[in-house]
Amino acid sequence: MREMKILLKRNIKLFFKDKAMFLTSLITPVILLVLYSTFLGNVYRESFLSAFPEGVSIADKLADGFVGGQLISSILAVSCVTISFCSNMLMVQDKANGSIKDLTISPVKSPVLSMSYYFATLVSTLIICFTATALCLVYAAIIGSYMAFTDILLILLDVFLLVMFGTALSSIINFFLSTQGQISAVGTIVSSGYGFICGAYMPISQFSDGLQKFISLLPGTYGTSLIRNHAMRGVIAEIESQGFPVEEIKDSIDCNLYFFGNKVSLGADYAVLCGTIAVLIAVYILMNVIKLKKAGKNS
Image 1 (spheres, one colour):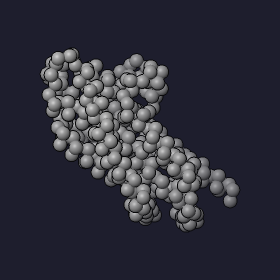
Image 2: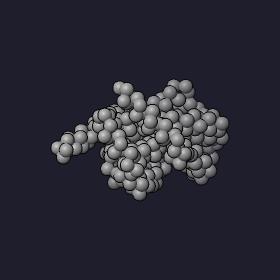
Image 3: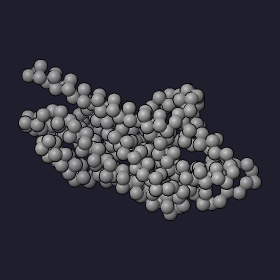
Image 4: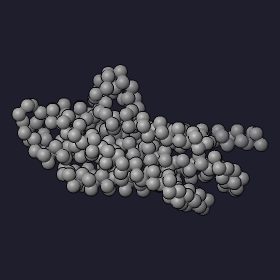
């Protein structure tokens, strides 16, 4: 336990001490917020207004609340995973600069070393993602938000689960990396591609049927749906209270997800995400156990 605490402090301090990694991680959600509100805000607004019959007047506050909920849910769904990869680069950097050799010849057991990377990444990413969540909530409050306190608590829970998912996924992928070039390549691929395959950049409903079915197999999709449902529950309830049908709107923004034609409940979303986290952590532990056994045989 003492060794784990020492390694946790060491890994977290190194991450926040590395200004390049820390600033890149922190700036990412801020940049996304600026870009989304600048370029995608009007697209989301026009898409929202087009869902109503011609001639129907929609209050600006309602439209702003809808756009704001969609924007912040997209930003958080992407940031929780991409920032996890940034935070977890320390594990690869230790391999690249040779620090891992000093750690492995120390009395520290290999499982403790492996899990220290996981938990340090988890803590570092949570600090940044909760900060990003606060910024997003401030933005939503400024433009007009319909979120209740329970919605905010559920969003924080969603962020926590998505960070756990991103940390476990990045731990498995980074396990096989050992150079700075590989770090850059994986970071670029994840940053540019994850938002599309999780339904954050573009609603899944706008993809072809085949692509929709493929994306429905990916666990990150269900994390995006959870955040989107909780960020937009209040504004959708307000739309419904004014007598407008909301199911078509919920379908268009992935508040309603379908798995091969069957509607997925929020409980199922949580089950898929939590189950995936458990499986990924188990795989990461198993990979380290196998590595330890191989090292024992070779020695």
